Image 1 (cartoon, rainbow, N blue to C red):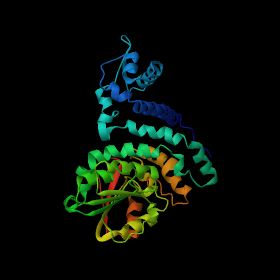
Image 2: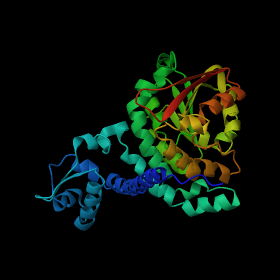
Image 3: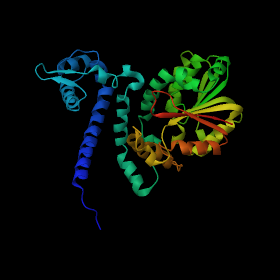
Image 4: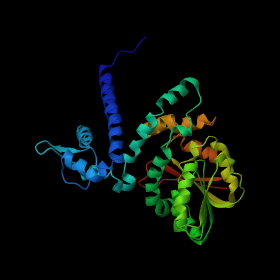
Amino acid sequence: MDLEFNKSKAETFATQMLGILNGSMMGLMISIGHKTKLFDIMSDLPPSTSQQIAEKAGLTERYVREWLKGMVVGKILEYDPKKSTYRLPKEHAAFLTRAAGTDNMAVFAQYISLLGNVEEQVINSFRNGGGVPYSAYPDFQRLQAEETSRIFDAMLVDKILPIVPNLIGRMKEGIKVLDMGCGRGRAVNLMAKTFQKSSFVGYDISREGIESARKEAKMSLSNSRFEVKDAVKLDEVGQYDLITAFDTIHDQAQPTKVLKAIAKALKSDGTFLMQDIAGSSYVHENMEHPLAPTLYTFSTMHCMTVSLAYNGEGWGTLWGEQMARQKLQEAGFKSVEVKQIEGDILNSYYIATK
């Protein structure tokens, strides 16, 4: 027997749906604002007309005008109807411009169109199994590099590495470090520049990423090198004092094997520093997570499906702390400590030793 229809509950949900639809569309417009640097330009302008803004940005006025209108009704920009001028409040610019650094949320909006491009392929996987391969996301490396570079530049040396006891002193004296899934090598090259007595290696499956990393290293660094390598094929034993993996383990096709390989590659007194998505392995415990809807969407349309495309385990983005602890222990790590860094709501930091 059907339960009685709750009109108030239905109206509340209808309002929620309107917010979701409007927010989704605003996300695309915010992505455009980031890519065209309109937010950056407007943050330095007084209240200006669409023509003035378009000229400053070097863009077509008609498109800029329509975008500005969308930003106004989305309550992102302010509009003076008497003067026909638009203004980006500094309180909003603090979360929309490149100058905002790690507080810039507009950078994440670019993923909306990236994921939208593979929607039909993901739906096909719903029906037939399998997954969408990494090659279907041609802009992923660039977006990841843009997202992580601002975090590394702001936090890696001063906030992330110091959470490992005595690590900074050891790196200054000289140790051997491997970054697994290094992407375009920003973290490796930044560490190599800062700790010149240490040696650094970066492995990644992406040839494009490794080529970019090598180009950056060639400018001034002699203590970093990069190699195209699938993480699951890591076969080194007892070589490294420190291995890092920044938001890469859950993306692996065979993460269980990768973690075991990392444990073997560490020296007996070595440390594994793993940055991965903060959250629980249980969905009901993620109800109050501020980014949970975004992360489960990202998992469905990228992290999980890419892993499954290669017959992988498909852990997903929010594999969670409980599972992370379990898998690290299964890999051979006897001690696992989890830390958070103030201002980073996205990640947890696992310090694992044998």
